[in-house]
Image 1: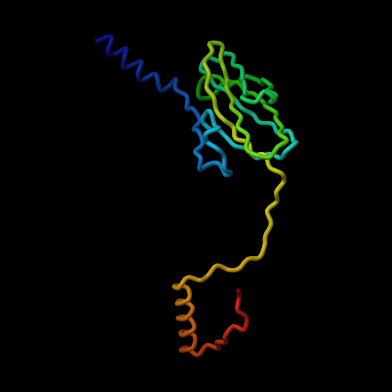
Image 2 (image 1 turned 180 degrees about the vertical axis):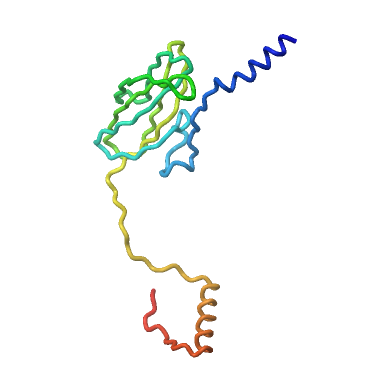
Length: 177
């Protein structure tokens, strides 16, 4: 009987310790094409940067007891600065890092972030970076899409209605291509 009560109390207490792990992004969440085979861990975020400009990205790691963690990346050229450790309002501790990187060649870069605690436990997430020159969108003229048959019939009915009701109807003098 005592074992049963203790077990029930333990099961009820577990959700109070659980912290929600942020969801990973789905491929449809990424606004640019990338190769999913090059992602060695779940995707946590994406960024668009320009070549030869330094970008700064903040990332954090969470653990229950506030054990010291170290952050590594799959790209050894990334500078990582360890920031403060803060108490998480949902329980546990967050260790914050600031990372700086710059790329010279356009394309998609895959950066894997891996925090490691003193016991050697790790978890990894990937940051997708699209490196692209400043490519301002522009507007250009085009031909209007062809009208579907239903739209043409609607226009014919409208003209017939206008003629029957003696509206001053004139034919258009210009036809759009």
